[in-house]
Image (cartoon, rainbow, N blue to C red; front, side, top):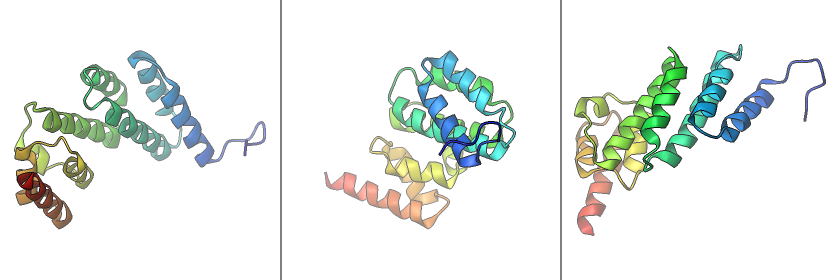
Length: 157
């Protein structure tokens, strides 16, 4: 349902419009401009939620792609001091490192959010070292158990 001309759109309609705009952006520069524009929405919670949803979708697509570092730099440049989107982008960068055999720190993974730890355990590309660390030191029992089960399944193959 479209809003009546001249009235402000309901939040859910604006949220969907923001997601469409972000998904339609082509190239890092255009995508960064779209993210910056969404973050100008007066409803900061809704704007950040739309941006984080977009980051989640886009990062998942680019995780194994060589374009990820450039994309992450472009996104970081426009996120300013938005704590939630900045943290989510940082955690996607950590996930890229642990799934691609790049350097990462144990402290960064053990200090990561529950979301990041769950996502790491669910990825088929997560390193043995990361799964071992999560099995021993994850924030929640759910993640510790899932990591232990993943390690057990890997040892049986």
